Length: 109
Image 1 (cartoon, rainbow, N blue to C red):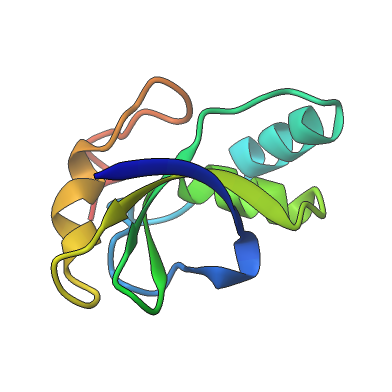
Image 2 (cartoon, helix red, strand yellow):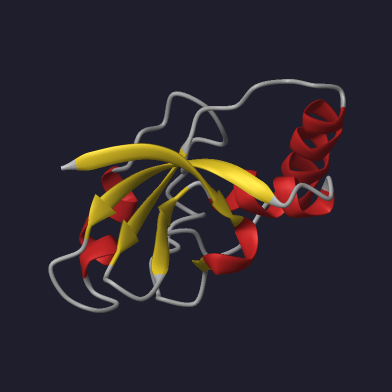
């Protein structure tokens, strides 16, 4: 079951090895942050909840931009994880790409 809800950015784990890119695009993060401050609405990020932590699977640029824009919360699609730290990994490379930087061959780890 998937829930859509705001989650405190401080509760979202970014260190689970789910980032498919070799590096973040800091120019895009700055652009997103400025748009967020101006009131732009972004699609929710995707997280997996394992009963303790929310593991980010898709939306690394949006989370970093929301943090830079001094937002405390970010809208999330919350999926139930099947096991700790592993469920988000399989989803990350195939997450929704309707918004954000599309991956390139050189940007994917």
